[in-house]
Image 1 (cartoon, rainbow, N blue to C red):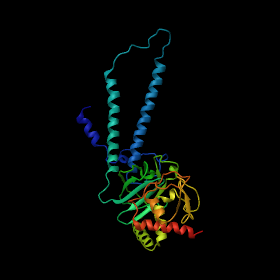
Image 2 (image 1 turned 180 degrees about the horizontal axis):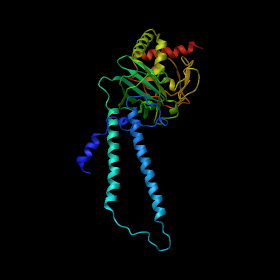
Image 3 (image 1 turned 60 degrees about the vertical axis):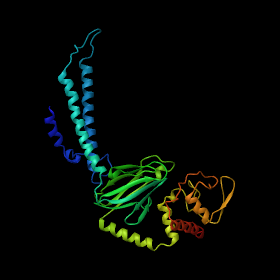
Image 4 (image 1 turned 90 degrees about the vertical axis):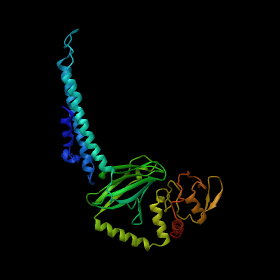
Length: 339
């Protein structure tokens, strides 16, 4: 077969893999919920079943030749060994056609997944042990893992992803999207959810003790419901007291992953009833938990380490504004009043 005959075959491969191989099995895969997840599944299924077919043919040939040409008595040769150029060409050329088809299907799907539409909605995703935060620059909204990622259906969404501590990996199985969150670097991915629903988010890169708890949910809403949600969220944020705003920051900035507010010991000390208390430090000195200490602990957490705890907290200097630090201080103060 000449190159002139091969090119029309490649051109005939459909732009979407799901059109070329529509009988993709669903029982072993998560729900298909994004616009390109069907193509990912179909490419995988096509490669898988071709591999299964070749595996069975090769095993069958091995068994047949092992039986048909077995040595029947000592010293007997089964058959003379001769070359067969046509056979050698066929077992190289035919698999090559499948490899080309694999590449074309995979490359088209990959490019669809890598290039977001120009009108995509932008959301910033930040990974931190052990919390995801979701920032909507145009809407002025920040959410935590507990809140989940809220997006409209049938709308392309571009995620700009980073990490403030170690390597994480942002994984939405139902959308077939997974991208590393790398410290001091931005990565990106996009998706378009096909219909409303709730879908799991996982961290797919081991990142420490509570890696398995670094989960969240994508909440996909109808476009009108998403617009209403944005308006309601802004109205609720505008009516918050400083302590309530600090409580919201406590969640969205990942503080709740390491500090409890009910006395439970986590990676860091609990903040319940801590304001105004004398804390023992690792160097043997003591410090009063006041406004200055809280600010210093946020901006330079390694400066004064409470005895019994490791210096694992990332610095928030440059990440929090003065009014946000004040709101967090007010929230920590309010934990004393709840006793």
